[in-house]
Length: 425
Image 1 (tube, rainbow, N blue to C red):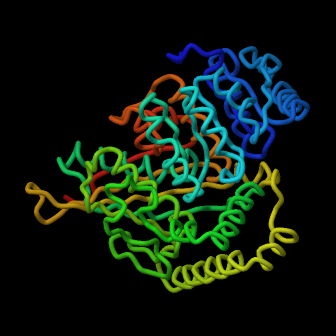
Image 2 (spheres, rainbow, N blue to C red):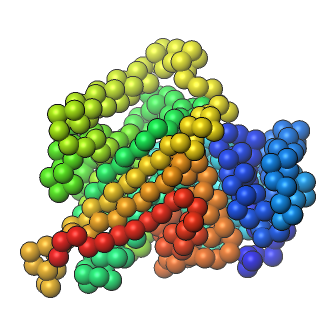
Image 3 (cartoon, rainbow, N blue to C red):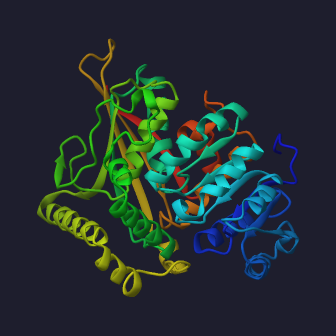
């Protein structure tokens, strides 16, 4: 149980949304209501009751008395209501985005109450704002504010920590560089994810500082390392000889790469001040794979360009893109999968010619929803029960620096797996 003297271990904020509903389903299936003290929270008590009724209807197990789940109401812009929620629980899970619009007051409430927090944010500009506003206070009172606890950025961030730990244990040294190669089969976007993307491009079009942050590969670093050189995300098509694959730009690299760099900095630069991390979409070998990579690169460029133009962005948002609350159907979620192959290279006195370590992070469901619900839910359980392995006591953190390897143990058997091996020493 939590070492906090609170009524709940976890409160799920945003339970009536698409992703929030999936997290609620997961917690009910995995922990029921006897192995975990948790509650549903949101703005509309009637809709929360409907979620609770749905959980009760789909779980007849004696350990899942969903009717016993408490319902807490609040408003994203009503600080008093959010303070009241944060004070009752050890951890808040937030699935309410765009976070730059709806998330700031809740983070403030959690820091003030000493309540741990985790979310799915991939909004780099907002994460930077939370760091600047709350990192020092959260560090002082030992509160862990952990952004990016879903597909962004657990496979990249905790996967790199896992690979580096394996390298140190087996080879006796850390890798100087890690590259991530992402493969996704199936999958789709929800309206909430699209809304966050649209919001980010809208803010970037209006605010020069947001544009600067989105272009800064060290946007999330602590002040002392903000100016260090770092590679920007891949933009075109490339062939990686070590991984033997054609690659295309990965839209989430703009989020994941700064997160991994922040982890290294917060952990005290164990992987070195010149450590490099980059990631891309893996398309395979041969002419067809090269053409696929080129098509993906062009498509992402066109989408980014369209979202950067106000009138075009408004038309896409109104008539083409899914609305908030919508998402992929059950068949798509359960029939999709992902793999992130991490390739780390380095050299040491014992291995002057170099060594290579690989890790693979796999999920057997849609990465952004089915697998994300598991990663976010287990992140919260780790925080609630003190299952954390990190020298960092508190602050605005990353999955690797805020939770660490215990998250991998929690994910065992959930369909999200991690494995590593030395392939060349």
